[in-house]
Image (tube, rainbow, N blue to C red; front, side, top):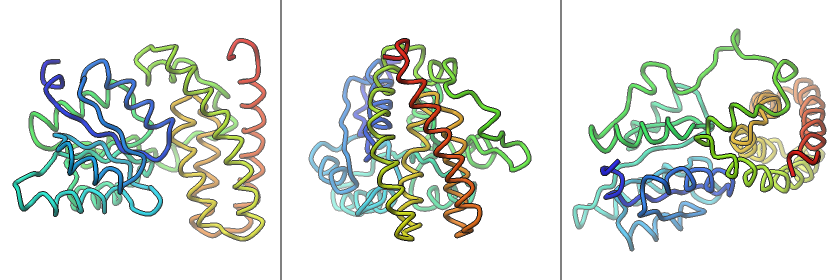
Length: 265
């Protein structure tokens, strides 16, 4: 893996669980790592350290990942600096992937991404300059409506999936779950207030942030119910929002009970 040891990588994500996951996987392959919690911080670090590769979340407050990348690229034209860039997003729609590729990204990964997928994509981008087949060939993790499993049919915690994503790093999985307990508690409180106040766009953003981090922890049922709630919020379908919110709360309760058990402490 000599290719990555010589590559300076900047990881940008406003969600601590997502950021910690990416950094934990990469630290075994790429010793030159930087991290940012916002698009503006990423711009500052890129200007100062000139990373070879950017891993960029898209949905971030104040400045999204696409705008941050385009700002970095524009600033680098004066001195010939143009980093490679991979978008890491929870939005699995093909049209969103094409929008990001057209906007300047070399590749798009859909959260949750496994450690192997991440390293493979990075190697392709560094070697070939792009990895567009992830969108064009439909391997971004998209699932059609007819194939999507219901939240009730999925396990509360999928241990095998969480370990596979983390490259069998049990310690990483447990650490992410401890962080997730706090994130889930805070998100549920804020989500309830947003829905009561009719702030559906803000509620959708909260759920969007939670989907990827729940999947990294192996909370597949919660991730699926969160996706259903997110879709109904985006569609502004009041009856579906009410139904999916109740389902989401049920999955939250199940997960919190499971994570509170001694085996997951």
